[in-house]
Length: 275
Ligand SMILES: [Fe+2]
Image (cartoon, rainbow, N blue to C red):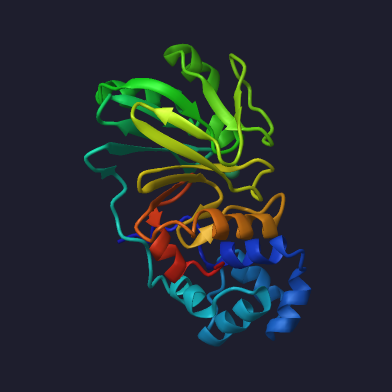
């Protein structure tokens, strides 16, 4: 089976290194490897030895045993991608943007057949098809962050659905047909009979946020299965907010990221080398 994680060993050490503003030469020296070897590891062309994984983990403040499991492809989260219980269903829409798969989701309230669209994955037509296929009423558009691979196509979705669009007040604003509704940490939104809570998960972007309801959380690029999104704004904010606002949820809560497979709080606590 193909290994499905969004990030490989090379991505993880590169994100941890850049996030902590460390140069390749600093890390290579501290880990006892050459700069050229580190560069090749970050480019996936050199596989590390077990000893090198543990040395790199130590200098990058990562968990060595968890990092080794990913470097040797020993762990990936259990399915399912699709989640359904008596009150809600999550539909995953995964589509390539610039050659890389991006996830959007429908959060469906089964009692009312109302659905929130979470991110656009730059493929509004696919989302409209899924709304039709599930015979549900679009009730809101929720944006985890403004990066174009997650928000392109927003005007088309807005026009087609008439939905209000919600985005964190600290986030840059994408192109939109109408005025965006700003949300903040602690806000609660309604989708049919579901209450959706907003929590801060910045660091990848200034106002990244996650949307949480009964056993599921839509986390954008804050955390991936076994990794985190690129810490473009603040590594510390990203690590702290994911730990405090997502990994503090019950272990069974399923996390739906902007890239890669869904996972759970419990699996990430056991397997994500950043925590
Ligand atoms: Fe992003």
